[in-house]
Image (cartoon, rainbow, N blue to C red; front, top):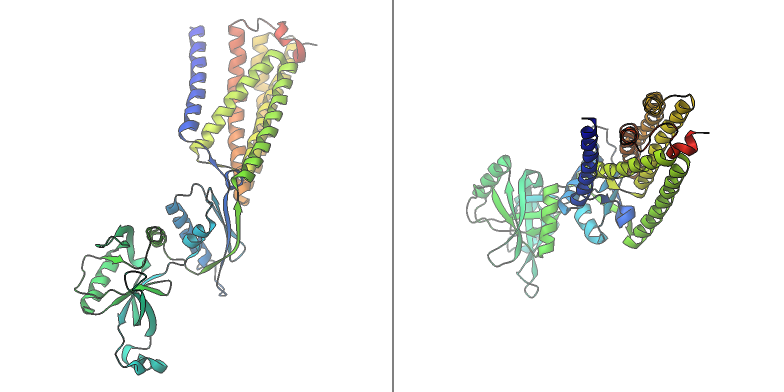
Length: 448
């Protein structure tokens, strides 16, 4: 019965390693900016107004930027505030900084404005005389007129009151018009649809200007009321511009304009070089640990290496499931947690040596050593875990990556040291690999 149970435990251990490998295969780790390269932007809000913590617009800017980046499909970006007005944006894998700036940094304030074509008497446009006819909010703007570059020209249009904005949208999608030109299809929410129906009803035969970031991109004439709440934004767009505009409209308008104060492109070669050096350092450290454990503790040291392999695969699998972004500080945290795992085994083996030297039988010594080492292992891991949690909540992006990998590593190292190593030692006794306390496999490190 005991032999069958041990075989099931071994099988479970093998399955655990295989499942961990499959998790990594189907959900690989995301690599951070410092490893795979990408773009780092520092944005600054263009506002001199003082805000309270309640109406602080920077939080709204961060939320809009995050929505736009998510729509771009960037995996695990880092967006964090720096000081009162600055925002740091790190985009792993994004090499086109100009495109990222255009999509992220544009205000994307969409407005639907009641408009009029100006009268033939051009003198009415001089010295704000037109405001007596169209209201104090009226202003003159230009709109492109023409379907292609050969016929492109600008017409003057008088803008009156804003009736709808991007906040009234329910959705936006890329599309093409009847001529095959790229356009944006939009749909208003319930409130916006009611307003749009009312506005189009009273403006039949008149233009409604569609304004993006204070620029009139089109001014279609209303032919009939539109109760459906759906409309189309057309202009001299390319397919790529339509896609970017959809991303901006879905993300919402920035509460305040922002400007780019720093742009840094990190090439994949630099990231790969850093990763290679980190991996070489880590591999050398692990090899030294393995050699030491086996030479000093002999067969138990070899068992700790097996537990370390299980620890490696299990930790990687958990990080994959958590969708953690692996950065160079994260690798450092992972390597440090390996040291914590080995340290737990060293504490256990030293306890085991003391119990054997006190004359206890091997199986009893194994149980007693694990019980007495548990408190020391728990205390050391808890103190490190407290430091890691503090770094996570108070640190920035890369420091938080270090804290995450270290925290996961601590939990897994306790499991592998206390559960896996103990199981392997007891299994070695059950299978007569370690016959008794005088076994030559225990020679160095345990018997003087």
